[in-house]
Length: 97
Image (cartoon, rainbow, N blue to C red; front, top):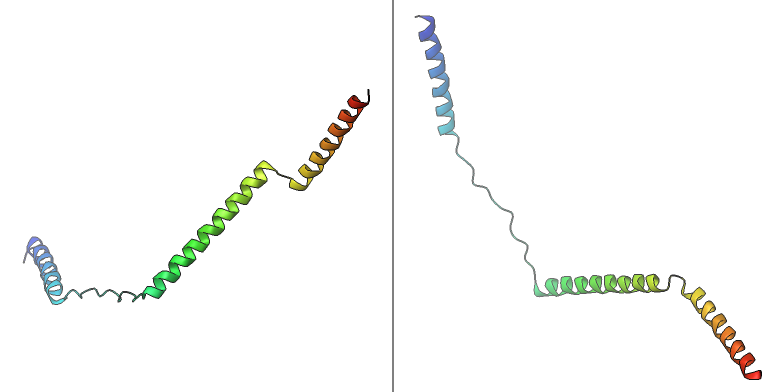
């Protein structure tokens, strides 16, 4: 046999082996795991947890907002009291004269 004929025989034989192997291999059906069975109690528990988490986040946001308005609340109270005393003293001095 010539070299070209041998090459074609090898190529044809290889393709034939691939075709036979592909025909012999059956695809397996993919099986999904069963879906979890959730009860209404599970759903309500998840909803309650979500609501509690949202309430905590809202409370944290409110606290952050307060800190932006009054970064040092105790210091702000001291300053307000001092300002009140100064204003009262000024008013008493103006009333005396």
